Image 1 (cartoon, helix red, strand yellow):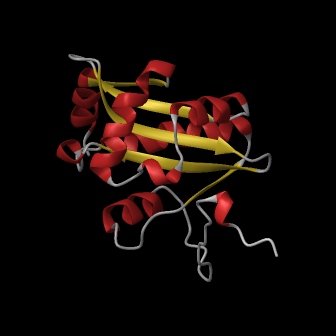
Image 2 (image 1 turned 90 degrees about the horizontal axis):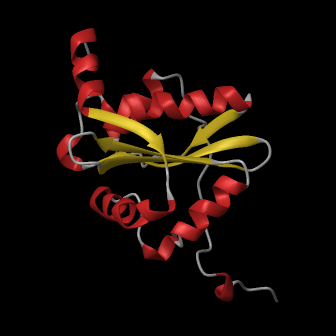
Length: 156
């Protein structure tokens, strides 16, 4: 992207910290982009709790309307930053907004002097290319597993 395109983007959009009232718009973006749904258990309360524990949540807004068009959620587990739910509304993708939002997220990890890790679906080649271009390396031999419902854990 050339410098004039970046300037034009920054004239139209802004990145700011998450506020409690943002959640309804954030949830819509997650649904539109496939980044989240109710079964993941990501709520406004969970976001605020993760921020209180050293994380950060950024939203990208369209200046003209104050509409939220992108999200980036960074949680902190005490030894590294985990980048979650980083995405832009589908109709605004491939314009450099995702790169800008990801770079702002990397600034947070640098300020905390922590590693940053993310998961991306292997079929999301646009995101894979973006993350690789920003220095993320594929870890290789890892599969990801999850138990979403703690009540279904077999503790016998």
